[in-house]
Image 1 (cartoon, rainbow, N blue to C red):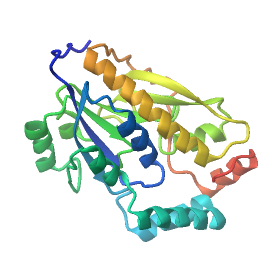
Image 2 (tube, rainbow, N blue to C red; image 1 turned 180 degrees about the horizontal axis):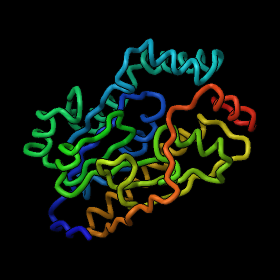
Image 3 (cartoon, rainbow, N blue to C red; image 1 turned 30 degrees about the vertical axis):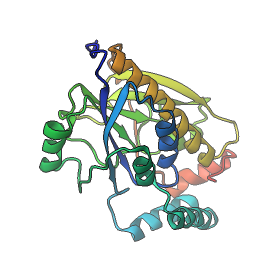
Image 4 (cartoon, rainbow, N blue to C red; image 1 turned 120 degrees about the vertical axis):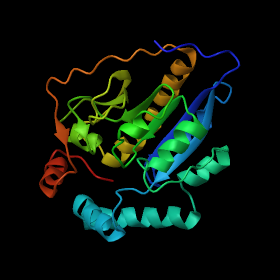
Length: 261
């Protein structure tokens, strides 16, 4: 169990995420709006580039995943939010949260700054696009935690909402877990279910799980602030790992009656 902070202390939290103005931004819309400032201090946010690859490569992957019609629709959405200048960075600045820049969260200078200057009690990963190595995992005063929109250890890896829909799950399991060097293998802090429909859209599920994940994460941070968190070790029996869906997976997804957008 974590120690209870002094009544005058706030829980110091550093956020690490990716620059996604379509979906991950939905998490932060809720998170910043409902953030309890009297209990939790957001000491910074690091916003990394998504995928860490050339934009043409990302576009090719998205075209293969969504298909030509939905890809064009998604590009239109992306262009609109870009023209508006709407992104996670803007939400953070409006909320008064400092931006902490780095090319990589595993960079030694960044790790040193986090550990020696920013000094967070908790580091929160929200769709962070890099695997956290030993340095950054050890930079928080208490621990690093991650929000994963899938039941662990079954839905480890990428795009858990897609795979849960494809496999006919009744609900997507939102999981806050400790981060360790082995991917998606840390102790479970808290879970919540998000209902799925027999015929659903990936778009609805991603938006809904991001919004509900924000509320779940705030509850977890409130528990940390009160010293009430005990993580349950993850039983790795039946573990699986899913990579980015292939075209044949998307065809099977649509055959079940699901839509992408």
